[in-house]
Image (cartoon, rainbow, N blue to C red; front, side, top):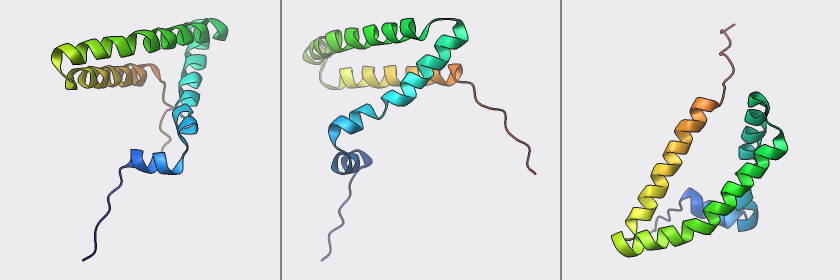
Length: 107
């Protein structure tokens, strides 16, 4: 009997790309968005990146404690659901901010 082996994309990424590299792949597009939006609203890129790094540090400081407290009180699923909703809201906000080039007419 042959067995079917299923691997999720995340597992495949864990196999093919070492973790330190895989964890940093999302930074480049995020930093590009910060740089573009900073220029669009008249902020210096240094200030924009300073605010981004401060928010990142605050999230790393409060996230585990808040997630642990929520999981202890309401169960393990709640922190994941809240994180998923936050990611979805971030996606919606990014879609509204990013300007897409106009579609070219077919030749």
